[in-house]
Image (tube, rainbow, N blue to C red):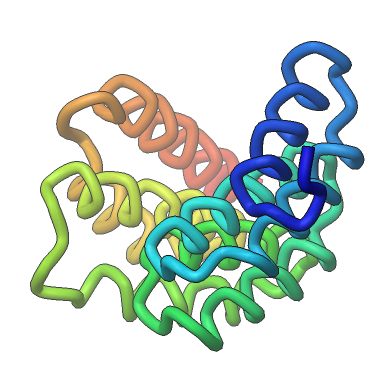
Length: 168
């Protein structure tokens, strides 16, 4: 096995995550695969997987660094931007996260599922920062498809929070 070959490292990473349940080992192999990957679309998919593993491992600062590395090569990698915004939110940089999401939402090339997904994420972040007007707007745009139930739930929870604030 050639350890410098991108596909080999990708396979080793998948084994590390699936068979051994060892996310850090998988991250290391995926990063090595990225280094040798010449196809930019495949590299972005590898970055996507690494950032997802970092987020699930609660390594938010590292996720931001890896996202920035990817974005320096692929400026409009929308899923990378979404995950970067999530990592920023998890590190109490909600304003920076929302700047990214608001730019994403304005992209004219979004698919319907992306519109719903980005608005839902924005709704969660606006709600957390007590900007209920923008949160309501975002949740209303995310109340379709797979996010409809959870968007409705978030909207209801936000309404309860607002009522509690009024009665205090």
